[in-house]
Length: 313
Image (cartoon, rainbow, N blue to C red):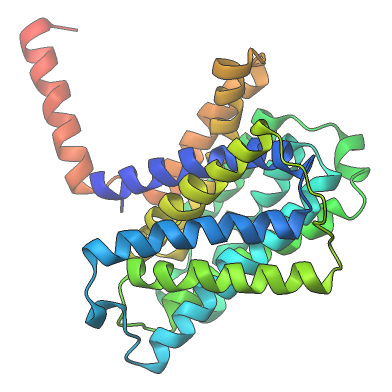
């Protein structure tokens, strides 16, 4: 069941992650992918360190159990680090729309892992239908051509790997029973992801000698570092704590919606009828999986009742 707070976390995660695909395409035209990811999380780590210094105590930041350490490793190594390494490398071969569709396998894969590792997060038949509807809606919004999906070379398998890594990591965070808050896990996880990404960049032999970064690429780097690299992950991991891995990853169904609306509002791109229908299909799928919590439905029913009582239909 979803509350107002949970809905707010979904909105923040979806909106901020939604700009990542467009920003990544801008930056990847000028910056090697793994180095791009590494600097992204360098920036995010600095932002989170400043945030933690003013909001968290040393005791809150200190891992106390093996579960805390495993949670940090799953957060930084899997959900943030390896997922983004695969995502950014794979996106070199795909359009933003196709990448968003493939990565939207994440919510489908999460209950598969949860079924084996988390007995309390198994989906009902209604939830399974909602998951499938959400994926159909994503396809309608992004509307990729068969040739774009089949002609992506290494892009599609890399994005599938990113989706699977993210889904598995989110489930493991729930399984390890950590005592640290999601905020503390994120504060540790983002710099861990930065170290891992720098190591992968060096291993891949990426050269940054004489690298020239134009203003547009710099702006994209700041966006993915501060907004979708620090703030979005704080909201996302809080969402996992509150709603569980399966329902938290539903937010990724809304990422292509945000990208499409942003392109229409900011770049003058067109929205097709299929995209608009897809928005509605995603919402229906989301509601089927999540349901409506009492804290959400009671105020809504009260508003509707008062409106019809005073104004009529």
